[in-house]
Length: 266
Image 1: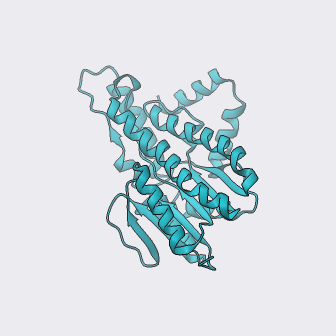
Image 2: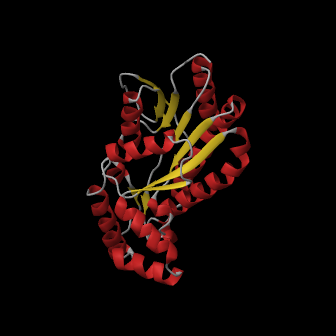
Image 3: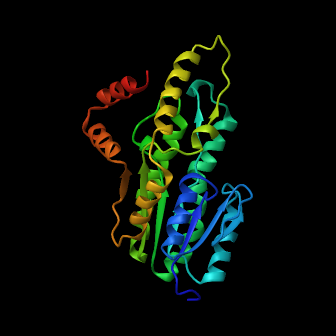
């Protein structure tokens, strides 16, 4: 091994949860690598500008980290985006974009890091999912769908890689106050659109919850604890009220769950 310090790779490090994770791991003495879509600089961070939807670039990046450090102890797959609007009117390009970022982006970085973790005989992968993966969010259906798909991918992959000493788990934050809210892509709806009023009402309620949510630093501290545990839980909900909420939803009949979600947002 070329580096006695532990090495972590974090995606989406230029803002929000990813940026807070960089701080937490740097404070703990890790060698921290990270990438994102825009120009960015941070003292102590080995940063690269990279599009996570380009699998060849992602693989080359991970290979370069291995060439420099000899190992990767932890991967935090954090990149995500949001699109709001009715399912009926979502464009093919919008659906492809959110799928490429939220789901396939994690697939590409997981595929890139697994050969190295398998050969070294250890490693932990933490994928940042969402409470929205458990809750089918109206007018954010594709966000919920991509996060649910990520959960399923992680669960299936865990059985495949356990024999090699590799751990892979999900973290599910509730509402977090970040730039994610302002960056959400909203479908254009004219005044005669039958979905317009209810969609705006629902999404506004969700955005108010986000902007009064947990801080990125708090979420990053919980992610760090999960990533550094010897035997982390397979699914990790962050936020006390969200743990209770998801527990109650899981024991409710599906029709009652849908009623509860409608009561929250409609």
